[in-house]
Image 1 (cartoon, helix red, strand yellow):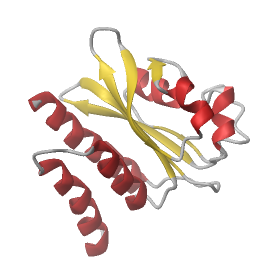
Image 2 (cartoon, one colour; image 1 turned 90 degrees about the horizontal axis):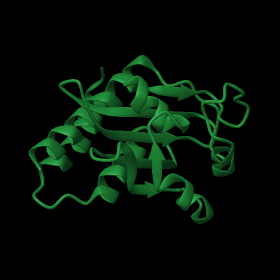
Image 3 (spheres, helix red, strand yellow; image 1 turned 180 degrees about the vertical axis):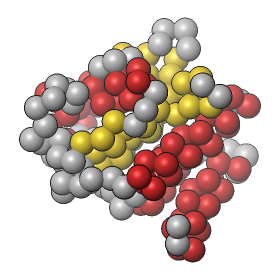
Image 4 (cartoon, one colour; image 1 turned 45 degrees about the vertical axis):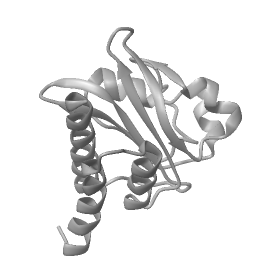
Length: 159
């Protein structure tokens, strides 16, 4: 891990120590950290088991109703939550696995990553980022997004 890499991750994690958290700012910094253009942050409603949109960047307005509430097991975020593991696609536009919902292609993103936000085996939500080009996320990037998700989960658990 490079020094620059470490400082970028530390900067994102440092935002979670401020008293009044702006989730849009957190998400924006995560998107920048992964050199992405689009992202979503969903918190799990523990009563309904529905992922509820907390912040987003780059999602077209007409898709907001479809991403505002996501059942566990549906779409990339829902499957990441169900599996409790990151779900990645090199190119969402050409994917035929059925993981991405048909409307997801309307985002025009390609390289996509959705990760569960976990703390001590408990799901708190999901964090997703995407690029406008095909991309395979590295093992380090998968570890980083899980670390960020854990830090967000710690904040939510303390809530």
